[in-house]
Image 1 (cartoon, rainbow, N blue to C red):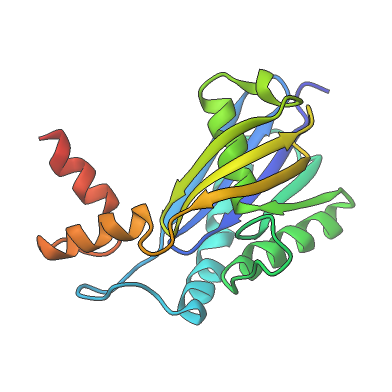
Image 2 (image 1 turned 90 degrees about the horizontal axis):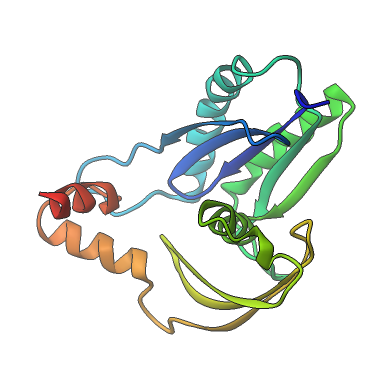
Amino acid sequence: MADRWCLGIDTSNYTTSVAGCRADGLHHARRRPLEVSAGQRGLRQSDALFLHVRALPALVEALCAQFDGPPACVAVSATPRDAADSYMPCFLAGVSAARSAAAALGVPCHELSHQRGHVLAALLGCGRLDLLGRPHAAFHVSGGTTELLRVEADPHGDGAITLLGGSADLNAGQLVDRCGLQVGLDFPCGPALEALAEQ
């Protein structure tokens, strides 16, 4: 059973991402930033949705080639946040692909929020999965989010994520982009600003 793996899909505002992970820790990922025309400050949701739909097949094919056999389950970011009114059309591309793949394979499809994915990835990345099952605080800082959260996830990553506070106006990612645009970088500006900082 060590070769069984899970396919993960995320279609956020500016990156199409797929990943595969086995229980023994082997993992692979593929991602493609969405194309934003020079001088533009973002994408309409309809354009983002189209770009995700166009990018997903090749990314999933490349990822699946890294594993023996089909995935045992599929997970997908279905909403931006763990909130009843949380919705962005760009996530429909990932949900459509994930549910279709899971149905064709006869495997479970797990829908979660982009926010929960960030929290769980941070815990995994810093070696703190021991915090699952214990209430703790987390910062969720991404393109359009600057939030302080109370996480009460169980050992499987399920459970309440409660907003404790956040930016009332400009989010951290928006600040990065506005600064980058002022110095002539293309949107989204994070990677180019990071490269400049390393110089």
